[in-house]
Amino acid sequence: MTAHPAPSAPPTPQATTRVHEPRREDCPWCGSARLRNRLRTGDLRHYKPGSFTVDECRDCCHTFQNPRLTFEGLALYHRTVRGAPRDVAADTLLSLRGSRLRHRSAARAMLRFGEPESWLDVGTGHARFPATAREFFPYTSFDGLDRTPRVVRARSADRVEEAHVGRLTDPRISAPLRARYDVVSMLHHLEGIPDPRAELHAALEVLRPGGHLLIETLNPRSVYAALLGRWWLAYDQPRHLHLLPPHNLRAELEAAGCTIALLDHRPVHIPHDLSGAAALALSHALPAPDTP
Image 1 (tube, helix red, strand yellow):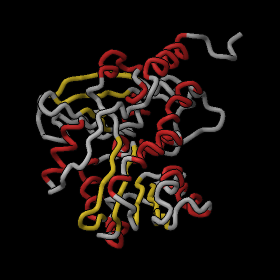
Image 2: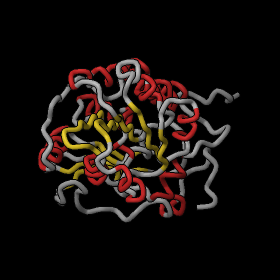
Image 3: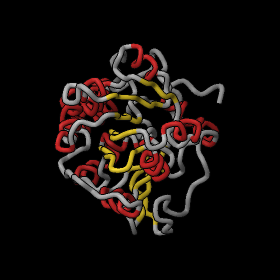
């Protein structure tokens, strides 16, 4: 897609049709045709045009964007346009997901398993998590994988030793990394992946026998998800394609021969849900800052 309306332009059918796949009539996780709509919304944070639908499977509770964005659409909605309107308050609350405090908590969860030799952080971005985890594991070799060149800049900043640009499901990346790592981490990564099941199995392929997979993800069965509706920050449409209930993840991993060593039901979704919902709602109810 070479052109799109300015952020302030109203959504048009043509703009959305070219970035969406055909609508699914079944659940991408279990195949059930028993779907129900959870919400319809626009891009509440970046104000880009378009309308997005989130459905839930009545059988397995998998929650997903339907119709889903194409790769082209994902690139469009992830792209930052200089000068475009943004919800600064909501973006600040979302950034808490990657705060040093949250990263320290995730790293501490692995202390009971000893010091690993090698660790791959998937969806690492600027590799701030490996930089924090090194405080607890100073002798571990940390590598990073991200679909953007940010990971290359992270390697230049010595946050990771090796930088891999692309997707873990790409055989050109996963084949050389097969059975190479003691730990693979995916922190709030599966939500934005077109096929989270394939991503899980690709992560298991690059683990050594006896290795550990560390996952942090959002729970669509959260009470706040039901109470706040489209104002729940974790929906983050259109960037989040899937929200995976913990029981689905656990069943998939156990079916693949994994043993669940630790399951933490603390609220792993973004903190301050009420504050985030208030920030989003107010930003859409109040006049723009440049309004006369």
